[in-house]
Length: 403
Image (cartoon, rainbow, N blue to C red; front, top):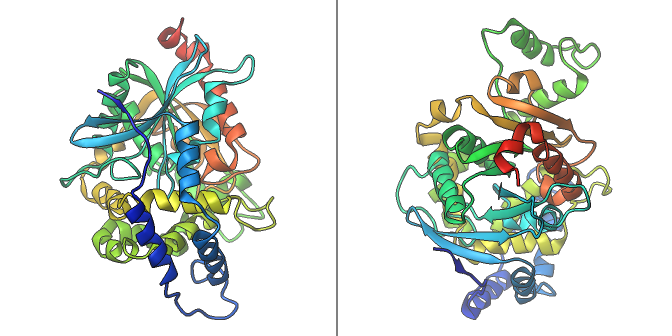
């Protein structure tokens, strides 16, 4: 049974954090390197000074407790934290919205009000936003192998415990993978999914897919796109760039999370730099003069959700579990529930729609004009509108959620 939960960090933990911030030993750096070697030194120094003062965790804690309804519930040996916001609209659909790494439920603070209390004519939702096991205020799994299938099972049980025998799911990053897993294994309850991050591979037996793949990496691809649009070519190349230049964190977290944990569980600024570099690299900065489209308060509070709870290393372990849990063939199954996809231009990568159709029952595919990996925080209105338009489709969901 779910119990109300109030976020409150012991003062001794906050005092320890302040002491560590004051004793931070910053690394050396090369002049002019900026973000090329990782997190930019001058920006991390700026964040550090702000974190020391005037940043106020107690103020952020108060805001989170005042603006959101928090709960915990014991499920599958996890003390699961979740936000639950019920709509007053009679046609509201239960929506499970799922974060990833390095984000948290904080990504959804701007989009939740738009989903719960939308404008006239828009679909409303009862929103449930859990913290992934081992993330934020959810306790960490205590045994090996707790990966996507286990998380999906836990989240499905959560929705059933809340009385939602039929619901829909939405997510990016890990949230996208969990949403798909719910659609595969719990389709009797999870009736549809919407994702803003998708990885799909070409079918090696499909000649068109192979031609598209070859075209994407041809020297003339940008000038003469064949079989693909220019946007699709950029999306495929984005994956290649990610694998060669941006996947170092993934390799470490999926192979030696414990070793990394000794460092980042001990250094709050080290953790902040590790995360902020991803918020910078994976976001759309075209309309912010190249600056991160996130406030200092958000970046630091999000880091605090990991640091103050001691869930730094356990968040990394999810990468290891997914890599080693031997769930590959299970989670690569075709997801038969109706699927909506929002494609944001500065996402890490995006595969062509016809590749994705081999893995998902795609019923809506929307290409956005702006936004990146953290769509719920970067472009909450655009993402909310796309989610509302998709799940409002009576032909797809009318029988499941008719009032």
